[in-house]
Length: 329
Ligand code: NAI
Image 1 (tube, protein in one colour):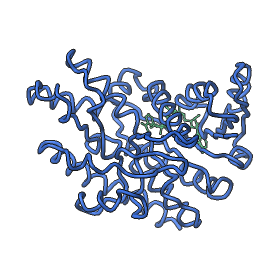
Image 2 (spheres, helix red, strand yellow):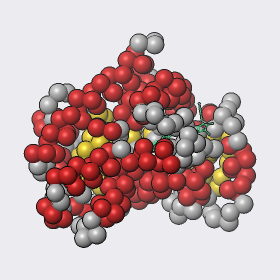
Image 3 (cartoon, helix red, strand yellow):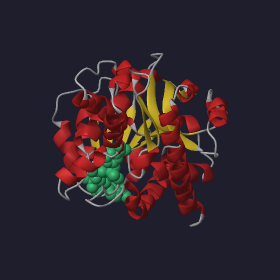
Image 4 (tube, rainbow, N blue to C red):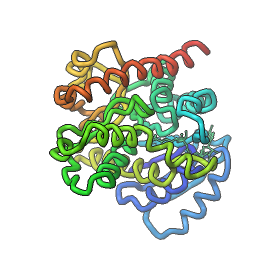
């Protein structure tokens, strides 16, 4: 029996993500919550003859949506408009995330929480701070969803160079906005064939791929379908790990708690005291099992430079999230 709650289920990401989750063989119950339309979306999905039971919850019924949830996935909040950065979303989404985190602390304190709402670099620290203040934080169970960055990287390397076959050798680490996104491509054999100009163009496209969607949608929103797909991939991988499958590694933005295997090594390899970061993480039934820190030893000089830029910006984004909670107590 696995219950998953989607908070922000009626939105551009929430609806296709809920549709994909309705097809999951690993779920028994899907609780859809939003400040609008959640019952409508739930009724619509409930007509699909898969075994997942779907229910919808209005604005005032966060408690019912969350009670008994094993996983909570959060795409609630406003998306970017042309000209906005993910950080511009902060003022509105920070408040939404804080409220939802208080709900999780109260009604589903043991759930695994997957935060999609941007800016992830700050919304995950907000979530952590609220859960810590409530005495229910467990670093193994809080994930910022950065999967789309790797999905884009795998797509763009192929679009860019027909010969790029070694996709398992590429990765994306750091944070989830602009310069904090650090594509790690140098381990792939195809990397050596790129000119510096091609390399820079490719890295820029991965870092700012979201802007292409924002521009193409002409003010109507940001990535929704590719994001729903990416979140679904992550959720399915996590559900497999919860069921006991071993060897599952996914990139995710986590709090670097020293009790987690690999975190001490990460901290010794990163200067500047960054407390949250996206890295490849081994998943298990308890969530984050270990951080695969080895990747930090494998960066080439150019990637090290990108990583240094990323961690400086990341630190500012993280502090902004924490201060939002601690300063408003
Ligand atoms: P949207 O505006 O289409 O949907 C957001 C939904 O959240 C709406 O249905 C809205 O009613 C709901 N909502 C607002 N306040 C709420 C609250 N307090 N409780 C519950 N629901 C609430 O936006 P979209 O396109 O679905 O994007 C959602 C978020 O995901 C944005 O912050 C966006 O920037 C982020 N995003 C994250 C990505 C990632 O890689 N992590 C990629 C793309 C978008």
